[in-house]
Image (tube, rainbow, N blue to C red; front, side, top):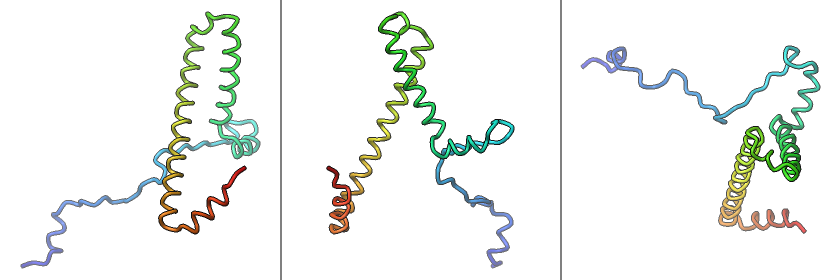
Length: 133
């Protein structure tokens, strides 16, 4: 019987050529340079502190507050398509933030329960560290 290597050229290659998987399936990359910013260094410094999402979120919160105050004096404004679109967007974002917060809290509780099972002394140390007034 011929060696198995004699058959390899006719067998299909079942393994991928390259095995690669991103750790974060959704990545966001921002290129800041002289072509798209008049002060790229300043913009990079600002982004290091506050993401675009955080900046837009703050503006959206203020706009929503101003809309709510204006609707008190002009109820017809609440039916304006731009206003309803913005308020629906804000509501969806707020729901996502709430769900993400709940997911983090659930994960934290699971991790603490697991730590208590595995290492009671470390569990007590963690509880002591977060003993807030």
